[in-house]
Image (cartoon, rainbow, N blue to C red):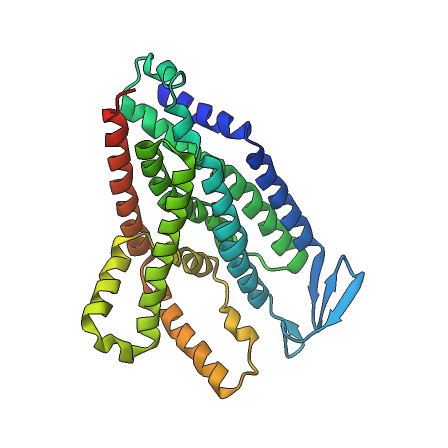
Length: 309
């Protein structure tokens, strides 16, 4: 009962922050913009037919390829709207939760209650995750309906993007919480978390480069070091590929059939690295990332429990 109350209290705190409503407006605005776009064989209409652009990019043999449309949507939503903009805003919005709770005059209230510190910590942590959960649920569900009713592409697996984006956020938020508990600074938590995000992405990108260019693997020490590091850190970039795999969306490179030899070679190398990612078990990818998160959360919980207030 106490644990649930702590989670609800953290969620109510997020409702008091203006950025919660800013993110909600962004969700509704993007959904409305998507609903204004329509696809028909040989053309794309904007603003419900106000402007029509002839194009065969989504049409093959006179048949509209809704799977290609769905692929573009999944890529764009997971990479941009949820994967970057949504998670970035959530990191900024939640970075101050723990520093605010640990301020003198504020921490005395929860500590005066018969609640173990670990339970107080976890309640706050899970309550913060609910901040993004509510936005992801609203946005994914609304866009799912738009893609289905407006474009005719029903992707039940796309709804799994909700837990996936929350997992992506949690992989980064654990770093934010650890820094917040140690420094009691929201600014430090944001900056270090963004730096960690860049680092996680960089390691995965370099490892992909080794896959795309097998000749680079001659540098055994560098290759093995990067490959091991990739499996230690959270696989933030893999979330998009898992979402596409679960939604059964097609590869968006199919939209680019007319390419010269050099461009096709570049695309082919990228597809090779992508195929390697898709071949990895989602359980292995998410499981290893969750182990990293668990280790960081336990360290932050230990620090919080040992801190003198």
